[in-house]
Image (cartoon, rainbow, N blue to C red; front, top):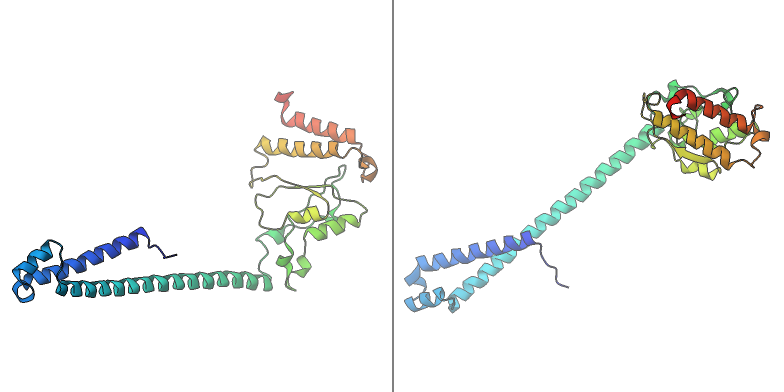
Length: 256
C-alpha cells in the first residue's frame, strides 16, 4: 500500500509546488515575448500549458521531488539520532545502577542506622514482630554489603529457627521500591500494604483504624489454624480481641 504523508507534510509539498509553479510562471511572464507568443501567454493564463511550459513544469516536479527526498532524509536522520541518544541514555542509567550496586552504594540512606530486632522475637506479651524494611537481594550483591544482608528470606528463616511461622505482614512504608512484595506470597505469608507518610502515623486515626481492622480480620480468618497452640506467650485469641477493643476505646472513645 502506498504510504500517505501526514497533513503537515502534504501542506509543505503543496506550498513548495505552488511556489515553484508561481516562480516559473512569473519568469515566463517577465520574459513574455522572448519565451512565448501572445497566444501562448493567453493559453498559459487559461491553464492550457504549451509544450515549453510543460517541460518547465516537469523540471519543477523533479525539483520538488528532490526537496521532498531531502526533507524525508533529514527527518529519518533525526529519528535515528533520537533513538540512538535514547539507547545511550538508558544504557548509562543501567550501568550507573549496576556500578552503585557493585560498589555497595545502593542501600537507601539511613537504612543502616536502624538495627534489626534481636533474633526477630515477638514484642513481649504479644505475637507482633516489628522489623525494619527488608531490601531486595540485589542491594547486597557486593561483598561489602553482605554483612548487612536483611531481605525477606532472612526474616522467614529467622522466624522459622524459633519454630514459629509468620502469618501476616503489614507494610507501613510509603513506597514500593525497596523489595518485591510477591516474595511474601511465595512463602505463603499474607501481605497488606498500608501507606503511612512519615511523621503522620500518630496524627491520623485512619491509619490506626485500618491497622486494627487488618488484625481483626486475620484473627477471625485463622480461628482453626492452631492460633492458641502456636503462640509464644499464653494469650488467648479472645484476649487479643479484647485488647484491641480496649486500645480502640482509649484512642477513640466517641465511637462507643
